[in-house]
Amino acid sequence: MKAARYSFVPTAVAIVIALFWTGAVSTIAHANDSSSKLETVYVQIGWNEECSTESLFHYDDGARKFLVRSTEIPEGCKDLSMIDDAVGEAGAAAIAEALEGNEFLERLNLANNECGADGATAIAVMLKGNTDLLELDLDNNDIGYSGAAAIAAALEVNTGLEELYLNNNDFKFYREAGVVAIANALKINTALEWLALQNNSIGARGATAFAEALKVNTELVALELTDNSIGDSGAKALAEALKADIALEMLYIEENDIGNEGAIAIGQALKFNTNLTALYMQDNNIGQAGASVIAEAMKVNTNVISCSLDNNGDDLGKIDKATLKSIAQYAYRNRLAYQAGPVFAATGEY
Image 1: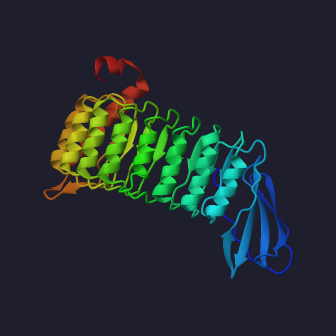
Image 2: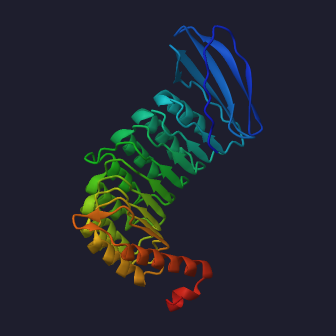
């Protein structure tokens, strides 16, 4: 459940407000911080009927700054969402500390909170000992390559986390301590099922590292690499992994400067792969030559139920509509067969 945003205006007097949200009662209480001589507002927000959390805010010239010093997560709380709350590194560290030994929280969303490398590292340390958290969202937190490396180290030992979202964090592909470390962690991790790494500058090198990891990993079913400049080289590496009939079911490689060479490699891989069900390659540089190979592969592929090449084209022009239509029709055929059961898989007819 996503948390609602609240705007608070500082005053010189104590404030006590009751807020009602999905049945939960929340209060705001005033205090004073002698160290900063700024008004301090403790906010207790009801995340849902069972969950509330205590947070500490400061006001400075009308701007809210999040300085969590202590966070209490009640028993039974399963979802904690603090999107775009300026949590910062100190706040992330406090939340990580609160989660040490916590056996109830399953989903934590700290997207867009300026957690930074130190905040990500604190969360990573917590993950090493926490096996109950199932989903973690650290999108848009500028965790950099060192934060990514800390998360990677946690993934090597964590056995509970199933979904991890690290979009828009600028791992800097040229630093092996970052994106390559996460890829290498997948060779060891046996729990993660969904990994989102959109817009992290992983490049062809990063894509190659993930391709090698996918040949070993048996649990990951979804990999989001949208907008990472992997190019044809990265696409070819991923195609080689797909040929190995890896466990991956969903691959997102939109906006990656992939041309015909990469698309042809992916298309050839689809003739061998029997696990991939969704392939998204929109907004690349794929022309008719690459799309035709994918269309031919879709004739014999019986497992891909969603395949998109929208908004593509090369120097010779866009992909013709007939080719795009045939790809969509083959995917629809597979989708109908999937819904009907195992008969189609045995006959290949519909």
